[in-house]
Image 1 (tube, rainbow, N blue to C red):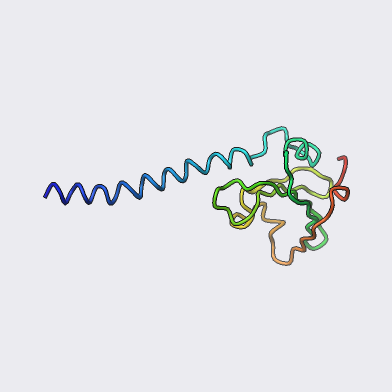
Image 2: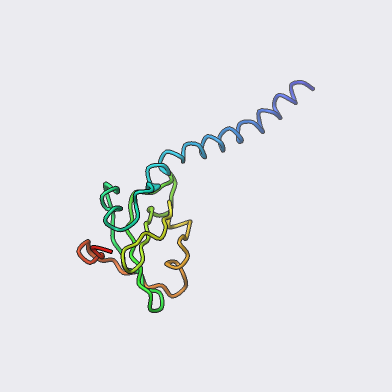
Length: 126
């Protein structure tokens, strides 16, 4: 009976340990992708984000937003991290994995038109 309990305990403990380990390991890329409190606009984001990947203009109805993508905030992410700004360049929010986490919601709404742009097309000043 003790042997059965040991095997059962191992069958439960191993997946739990692996799950907790993977969640803790994801904290490393998440902490690198999470913007500090100093990120308040596009310019401060560009200063902080050492390797931006791409720049986008997102149009939803008549509203214009801008996104900057960077290295993902998860190890097994389905998309890059994304930092979203309003039409004036003010920071609205971010997501660690834009493939799985659609935040902020206004730029991922149905009918949003996402167009890749160059760095020069981003708003310069507030």
